[in-house]
Length: 211
Image 1 (cartoon, helix red, strand yellow):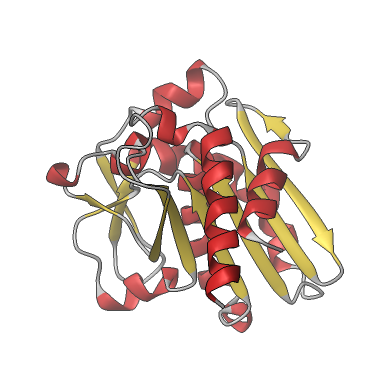
Image 2 (image 1 turned 180 degrees about the vertical axis):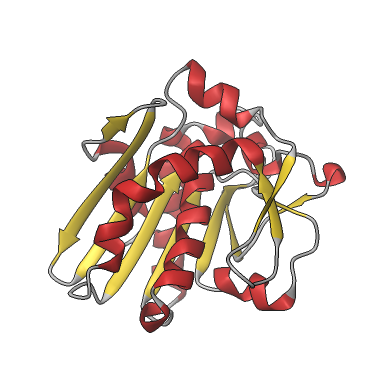
């Protein structure tokens, strides 16, 4: 599936809303599980977006790392809802997708899959469209590699992809794919879904021509 198609699906898939105004969806296509997280959709989401002090997050005796407190709170609230599907051994590939606020959750979900399904580490992908920064501080090398198969998609001047500010210690993880052109949109307009989709399609057409 092309990136533009994944993004369109992320925008249109029927989401399940749980307590805390958290929206997620899962789809199975054969042995592949798609996990989607919706963009901000309500006051509660924005309250969590702005709750950006860093909070430590570690697993058992593994290295401790730090993440955006608001996003981590939301992820922990939805984690149990999708854990059983992730752990289903009939699933042989997992693709995690999110947009904006949902992209931040996709980052944390991607790490969860890496940790709990080591058999799928070469068969998992993650995509964060218009993704904010989620991780704080310098990651231990053995933790940083958990996102080597995650891609952040930035429509150049998209303001959300520059928040929280780097000056506060927040960084992106995984790979960065830049689409669009500088100063083509305002920082807010560059984040709008219709403009992200337009630039994704341009990127795909240009890549096809180049090949």
